[in-house]
Image (cartoon, rainbow, N blue to C red; front, side, top):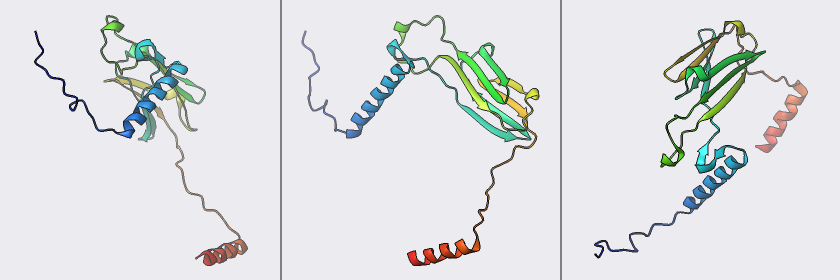
Length: 171
């Protein structure tokens, strides 16, 4: 039986984009570094996973929020070591899924550990952690964490006159 579909070479033509080649090269370099640093397993499965975290001050408390979708709260560990907050955990792959059944995969599984240096004035003994809807929220009361402020730089009057004279010459 003859095929009813005709091969048309012009349909297969595509406009050349030099950035396609650059993107492809970037992707290959990323994969090379992932393999070299132990981040990729056979089949393109990424083993390194780092959850996104935000930190802010609210009502006199230092708050850390971590996005942990797919992580069982039993697989989380929050601890304090001297002046450091440590969040450890693991996102486990479903037990029934087999490698050969995947068509495409971007979700990373595995263990992670994040460490954050805590500022002076944080009451580490009063740390509280709660997990809800895939978000871990850690709060610590903070006495008074100093905010950044601008410091004026003093310049002796003699040097100030020299700087002004040089500025006038340049203008």
